[in-house]
Structures are given as C-alpha cells and as structure tokens.
Amino acid sequence: MRVQGGGETLMIAGGGTGGHIYPAIAVAQEWIARNSMRRVIFVGTERGLETTIVPKAGFPLELISVGGLKGKGIGDTIKSLSRLPVGFAQAFTIVGRHRPNVVFGVGGYSSGPVLVAAKLRGVPTAIHESNAFPGLTNRVLARFVTAAAVAFETAAQRMKRADAVLTGNPIREEFFSVSRQQAPGTHARKRVLIFGGSQGSRTINDAMIGALLFMAPLRDRIEIVHQTGPNELPKMQQAYRASAFADARVVAYLDPMVGEIAAADLIVSRSGSMTVGELAAVGRAAILIPFAAATDNHQELNARAVELAGGAMVITERELSPERLGFAITEIVSDSDRTARMGTAARTLAAPEATKKIVDLLEKIERSE
Image 1 (cartoon, rainbow, N blue to C red):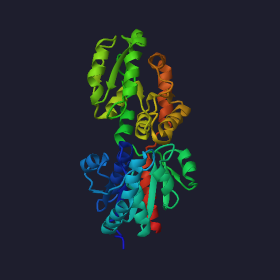
Image 2: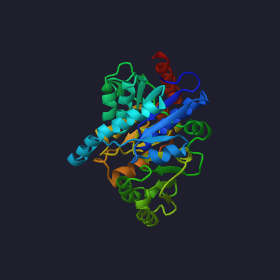
Image 3: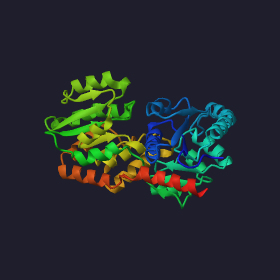
Image 4: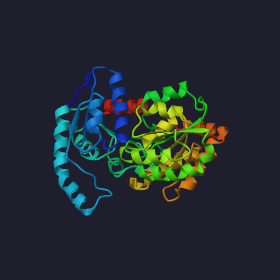
C-alpha cells in the first residue's frame, strides 16, 4: 500500500547522461517545493553520471545492475541481457521497499526495469522524452505507462502516444532568469562561445583549428571562448596562440555555463536535448553540429527543430569542414540583425513551464489511480 497524504514519494528512474539527469533533478526540486513533507528517490546505475550529480543535488540514489541493448556489440548485448533478470529483481525490491506514490522514467538503462516493476506493483507510472526521436527504452515503455510527456511533438508520434503531454524540457530556472537580465551584444566585441559537452568534442575542436584561418578578418571584432574538454586543452591552446585569436579564452571546462551562454552572441555546439533547451531558454543564435553517432540520430533531429524555427544553422559532421565552419561563424556574427533574429526565434522553443507541467501530470496520475 502506498503512502498517501503529505508524505508522497516520487521515484525517478533513469540517467546515464546529463541530458537525462538534470531535467530529472529539476522535476524533483519542483515536487518537493510544492510540499516539504514529500521525498524523492532516484534509481540509476553505477556507471552513469547520476552517481555524482544526484548525491551532489541532495537526493538519495539507489543502484541496479543493468546495461544498454541498442547500438552494442554482440558481446555487450549478451552481457546486458544476462543482467536483466538481476536488474529487474533489484528494481522490484527497491519499489517495494520505498512504496512510491508515482514512478517517473526519464530514459536511460535503469528506466525499463524500474517502470516495469512499478507497473507490476500497481504504482502509477509516467515517462518524459527529451529528444525529438525517442530512445529505445521510452519507445517500449510508452506502450504501457500511465502517462507520457514529451519535449517535441514528433516524439509523441514516434512513441504512438496520441495522449502525450507536450511539456518541453525542464530547464533550470537560472537560464530563464538570465535571459531577462542580460542581452547579447552588451560587450565591445561580439562573443562566440564554442563547446562540445563536458568532455569537449574532438570533431568540433579540429574544425575550429582550421576555421581560425578563415576567420582572421574578424580578429578585432570578436572574442572567442572555447571549452575544449580536458584531453584536448594543450593542443587547442597552442592552436589559438598561433592564430589571429591569441587572446581567446581556451579552457577545459566551463562552470556555471548559464553565464557563458548569456554573455555570448553566437554559440557553436552539439545539439543534445539539454543544450538545445538551454539555448532556447536564454535565446541565443547557434551553429549546431549534431553528434553523428548519437542513437537514432536524435541530435540532428533536435537541431533541425531549432533550424526550422529559425534559431540555428545546422552543419552535420558529414558537411563540416574548417572553411564551412569559419565562413558560417563570419556570416552570422557580421550581421547583428540576423544574430538577434535567430536568438528571438530560438526563444520561441523555450518551455519555462515544463517542470511545472510535468509535476502537474505526476500529481494527476497519482490521484487518479
């Protein structure tokens, strides 16, 4: 029997990447903000980023043993399949021990076993899909969960859930706050921010080394901030020192990212769901270079959604070259009106109410079952 009244428990299953975990944490914070008597339990795997991010955010984390199936070699697939019964047994025990009022899946390896266990125990379940193309786990779970929420309309179609609630992606409030406080172009030179995720992107880094030559005429008109990732830092520092942009700020990691995005006029980045959501929240023009190896090509689909809205130029890895990237950056930052229009267009994709809508949905299905 689940706990009712002021002490409701939300269990959040999933993780692996920041794109899954940070939105989940935003939902957890909103859940508790509505009633301090509530609690949240996360369930993940020992190999995901949740092992560091979730405890740092102040939430308890349970671990199960499970691996991915899609895009794996035959050896890894066999190992993952052999672990499924163990992972499911662990999930069934965890759900029984914590007796959650509702279980919420955000994608990632642990979502499947936990939501199946919750369903068997009669607990209401919901999922959220952050990408334009749903992952394998969510496509399977969509068939039996109580409710589904999506960030893109196309995801609902691909999950075959006509009743899916369009919420957008939960983005931390500071990204929306900073967009109201700081406009691009408030510094003397246009600023270009380049990043490829917390570990950087060798593909983007290598393209930028060559692009600097084509961008040389901009030396007095722009400033560059480039997050390279730790492994690529020495190489990139040397490349910038040898270029017309020796004064560029070249660092391994940027934190907090919100201020860096707000201070930029143009972003060059990958197009994971979190990045796309943050750029929309702040409202910044972007050149998006989707990660070609992303499962189901979901990064390109995310990027195309922003491009369709007018907020980004998309350059696929197949199309990427130093010349193409250098001229694209030059073309956009040289036209202030275009930069501003792209930022405004990107903001039309922002979803400031996403977290609230998701928690509203969780409360609704909790009451209905």
